[in-house]
Length: 237
Image 1 (cartoon, one colour):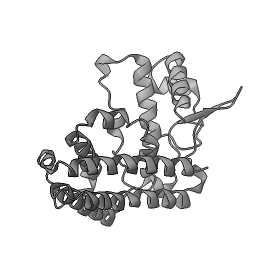
Image 2 (cartoon, helix red, strand yellow; image 1 turned 90 degrees about the horizontal axis):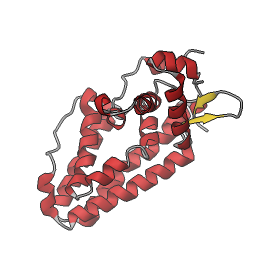
Image 3 (tube, rainbow, N blue to C red; image 1 turned 135 degrees about the horizontal axis):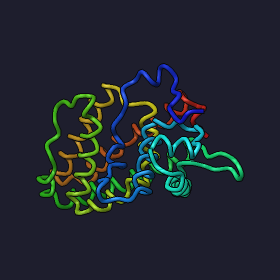
Image 4 (cartoon, rainbow, N blue to C red; image 1 turned 120 degrees about the vertical axis):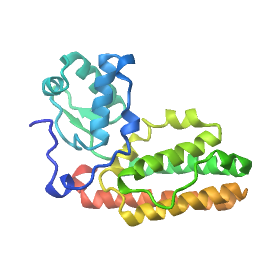
């Protein structure tokens, strides 16, 4: 089977998300062939260009990427240790299915971290001046970039920008799931409203209000995991 995605018609017709493109972005002038292959495969898995359960023939991947089999093998081993692919002994390698329980656990961890960040910021509300103003409207094509910028900005204002950057590969399974069922226009409007509420509560020094707004904002992601599992059960375990 070709490594080219064999998406169902309704999935292929939907707008693609660029939410995780920053996770895989790499300056090719400063990285090895093995690292670039790893990044390319991780990006393809998270963006659902390689689908859950899809076979990953090493030779075909190597030909597609224009490299030898060795860096592909090394990249697949690295991805397996991170849970993105699975290999059966003496058999093929496949893209791992999405694990609903693990995703909910990751979302719980993410919420705990982001709540801790806004509570920290609310204790020093002057830090809100370092945050960009939340726009009234963001086009659908630019929403993911805005959302990433907003959440990264919170960590940055709290002096934890490096922590946010270090978490991106760990949280990549969540981003992969978010690409299964992209946010609707109404969901995006609601998210922007929560961004404003969080910024306002932090600026007012309202620790509990900021925490409540963040929890409400991230609760939608938990619901999205269940929705994705219901719509594409064959991609979940």
